[in-house]
Image (cartoon, rainbow over all chains, first blue to last red):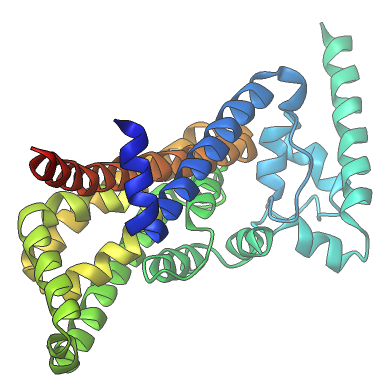
Length: 121
Length: 205
């Protein structure tokens, strides 16, 4: 009987049984989180990545589908120098702006790019 | 902290990848999986070279695994008198040795990637129980090839959605570890209680 087993374990191996319950809880927790993460990200509306301090200009260019030369201006980079590997956090610090400012500049560049693309069609 | 370490990769390159994978193999709480995904992403955009990312992550992981192994083995040798003194400790060590002699290879291999959060501890246990080093090292290399290829490869392929892949993979990895824990501990508890059931049966007969 499963009940007898649990009673026996509760009497003689209580810590072990408690650890088992804890792991069982973790199983449920990660199960729910895995499924909900998968569902959340499957929705195209959630797939836009906001800018983060770790991203590089090339990464943003790819993620937002903006050509690097258009992005350079939005990110205060020298348009004549070759695009370098630097984090957005560093760019924000060098130009004494916040990441939100960079976000709105990149959004504006992406919007302008979209209008340009539509006009060419 | 994750964001800060990722930004370090963007600013300083693959040296950070090497250091972080090394530290993660010694059980230090650094976001190595996320970092490999992001570095794979940087390789896709052309910020880093794919070969360099792979080499740095793989080198750091192998060096970290073996450092963990030799640290634990050294400590085990130094304190073997203490370990053998108490019968309970000695019995536990003997059981661990027997387990590792039988399952050591696959434990090392799968703990490198499938149940990666357990990896560092398996390294320590391998060293402590004196698993043959060459066996440890070869299974470790095989496992780390899978781990590094998997994460750097996913980062490279899904460069546009690192955040998404990281959140799904992070949770899935926790899920797999919890599932393994449930099966192993559940089996153990089942056996413990079976022994007891048999005893009560013989008593009542």
